[in-house]
Image (cartoon, rainbow, N blue to C red; front, side, top):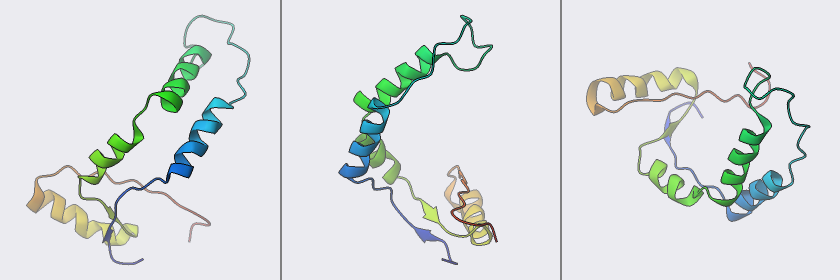
Length: 105
C-alpha cells in the first residue's frame, strides 16, 4: 500500500472471544513483596484491569465510536499528506501510530 487509504476497525466475534479466553487463562506470577509501585505495577491492579477487559469492557461500543472518526492506513511517507490535511483543513487532531510487521526495510 503506497497511498493512504481509509479503513475501519473490525474485530470478529472469534477474535474477541479468544482475547477473553486468554485473559481468563492468564498464569499470574507471585504477588510482589512490597505494598507500593516500586517493583512495578502491582499484581492486584493488573488482575483488576484484566478482569475488566475480559468481563466488562464494551468493545463493540468503542469500535463504533472509533469508526465514527476518519481513519487512514498507509506507509509513513504517504501519511505526510494526511498530516497536512488534518492540520490545515479539518481542525481535527491527528494521532499517528507506527506498527511494523515483519522485517524493517
